[in-house]
Length: 330
Image (tube, rainbow, N blue to C red; front, side, top):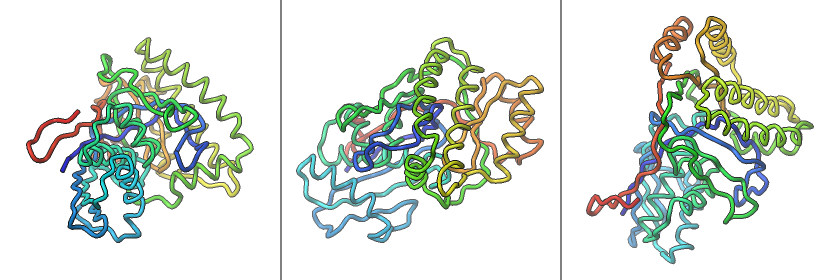
C-alpha cells in the first residue's frame, strides 16, 4: 500500500493539442507553474481479494464505467510491474474536477506515484513523469514543483517534464478567481482534438508556442514577472482563439470570465502589475509579484467576493510514502 500527494499546475505556455492520442504526445512543448493550494492525495492498495478495481473519489465509489480511465491507467502499472492483482484506489481531490483548474494533472500524478510504489516499482521522477503522462498530459508536469517544462518528444521515452526552477527565488505568485467550479461541457481532450483537426490557424499555433517558450524561459532567467505575465496572457488568448476558430466553434469563456479579464486589465491600467491566464474552463488565474498581493486582492474584491479568490504560491513536487511504515519513497 502506498500514498502520494501531487499538486496541480497551470501552464504559462500551453500545449493544446496532441500528436499521439494513445501515448499522449503533445504537438508542442509547454511550461507551467505548480500550485501549492490545489492538490490530490491518493492511496493505492493491490489486493488479491478483489475481483475488479475499486475506485473511490472524494469518498464516492465510482461505477466500473466511471472508473474506466483509472483502471486503464492501473493496467499500465500492472503490465510494467508484472503484478496481476486489482487495486483499491482512494483519492481525495482538493480541487474542483473538470473546471479548468488542472484536477486531472494532480489526480493522475498522484495515481502514478501511489500505484507504481504499491506495485513495487522504483521509478525516478523522469520515469514517473512519463508514466503520469499516460493518464493526463498535464500530469507529466505535476511530478515536479515550481516552474516546469514538458518536452514534447516524439515517442514514449522522449516525452517527459523536468524542472526549470523547483524552488522559486523570486516573487512569482498566482491567484485563482473561482467563477464556476462545475464540470465543463467540452472536455480538454475533446476541445484539443477539435482545434487540431479543424482550426485553420493551428499550424501558426505551433510557431507561437515555440517563440513563447524561448521568450518565457528568458523572462524566468531575468526573474522578470511583468514579462512572464505578459507572455502567459497573450499565449492564453491565442490558445482560446483556437477554440473559437474550430468547426464548430466553442469557448470556455463565460460572461463572468470576461468580467474578470476586464478587472485584471483595469488594475494594470491603474499601476498594479497583474496579468491573467486561463486553461480549459471559465476560471481565471492571475499572475503577479507577491509583494503586490494585497493590491491585487483589494482591486478584485471590487468585483468578486473574497471567498472567490484563492491565493497560491508555487507548490512542491510529488510526495510518495509507504503506508505500512510511513517511510518516504521519493
